[in-house]
Image (tube, rainbow, N blue to C red; front, side, top):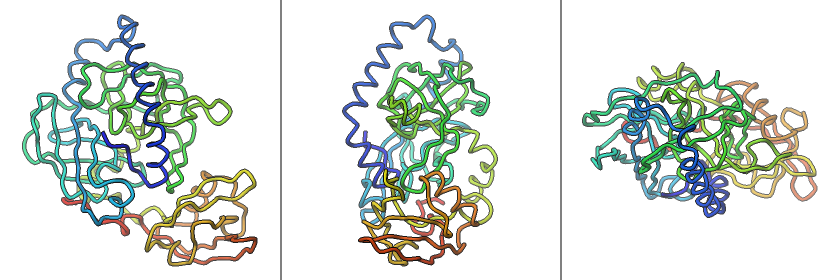
Length: 346
């Protein structure tokens, strides 16, 4: 299975950690099998979960922006949540020209991208021929106890793996991605890209997104997985199915991949071609010091304040340092979807 490819920085970090993740996933499976009596799902929800998880295979155009940095062919998992409707992680579907679904019986079913929600990171696929698979209900990801027992299942797996929900700490990805309360689980598993996370009633509560090295926070650097909570999908779902996007203006996007520097500020690691940042002259090697004249503390601070300035299209000023010289850069944010080729079907 190809690594997730949210953005270039993420792909780099994940590829470096794949070997460890495979070992961790084997450990998790072994742990599950040794305590099956206390960790198995009840029979009825178990059967529903087992037949609901499908393989998702997508292919993007060779010249697409995401193909150059994250791969043209992508594979992960998805979960059937409605009649012929599959929920997965959005980076599998970015700029996708074609999508296929493979069910637990080995049937290959053509699909069509219905939506990629850049705010939550989730994606939706509509099967073009009947799936004839029972959908799983969506649970309440906000009310899950921490710590608490959950189960995950990914493509080609024959049994769910028991996990512990250990935290809901904020996650900020350097590719301008922010989740205020993701589902952080342990032990780490390797088949996480688009995999389902289920409660003890077999209800879907999360979709697998990332391998992370600090599920508790930087003070306790223990590895695990990040799942996107399904409650982020519930309100915008009708609009996503109808038009492929949330209602109203998009979330502001600058096209900057960055990380916090111990000495202060945010180091610019990548600038997307044609993005607002690129057009304004921001480049790799620059350091972001301030937004609207106020010092940037870290990535969550940056993204929260950026969004507070208004939706995509809002003006802003960044203070940027390069080679010891600081300057103010004026730019307009945009909707990231405008920088990507629309997937076939939306």
